[in-house]
Length: 243
Image (cartoon, rainbow, N blue to C red; front, side, top):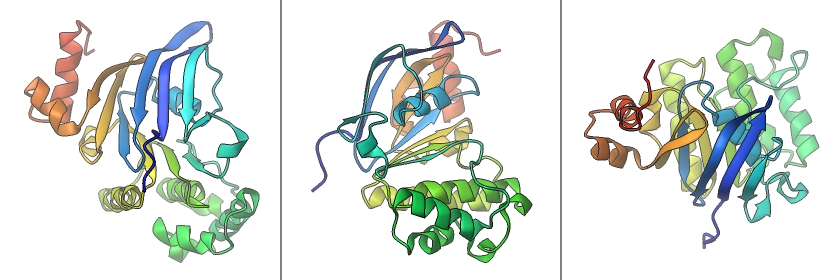
């Protein structure tokens, strides 16, 4: 039975960087087994929020609880997978060697590298040196590392950047499959047409949550034909510039 305790609970989160606030009192919860999207333009605070969720961001105030533990707790090490926007793999190792190394660090099953390399569609490239991969392939290796160990929560920062439409479709199908198995996913994007694939969206702008709801409810609420139109109307309602 799925726990009634939220996978993620954020309360009045404030983050300051370089002497200025970049997150202003963010608050939300994410249910277990849900697919939550963070949508907004570059610089709106999505990555900072994700860093706070995995416990690598210094916060000014507020609380971030993940799987019942304070974010960043040692107990969460094997329960949370994090894929950064910039791939964090070793260029002089092959795809398979990278995955075997990180699996050993995480204490993941020995069979995991073979599983995740196929899940991200890189089976034919398992022996290729990472430095020779395309940008999109590196992104998928980064995602494969995050999948090692079968984490309960996956935090994915712009995981489809640089991928062609077919591969993007395949990854979103994988995300939906993982959510169906009970994994909670928090996925950031600035691409509006991807946002409709989520269960729920946080629309972010300038360090604040502009709106929170299911994609269809956000469209219905604003009377917009698509999410881009909904986003622009919400900005206008709050007196913001779209420039």
